[in-house]
Length: 90
Image: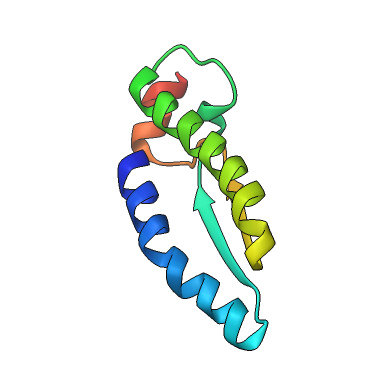
């Protein structure tokens, strides 16, 4: 969850920044987090740890990259109604 998001975002940074420098066009990065990263739950600690790290990095990069016209946000949905989620929510 975290490493792929971190590496992909770093790879995109030069292109996003160049867009602002050349044409003053702002860019956006939207990460898909989870409520598991902002609250305590009774299962899924490794998953929650990666989502919490994603939330923190999103905020830090928003502060760092905002000066270059790059907005970074993270949406954090709750459980999605799937068979696997139903097992956890019992």
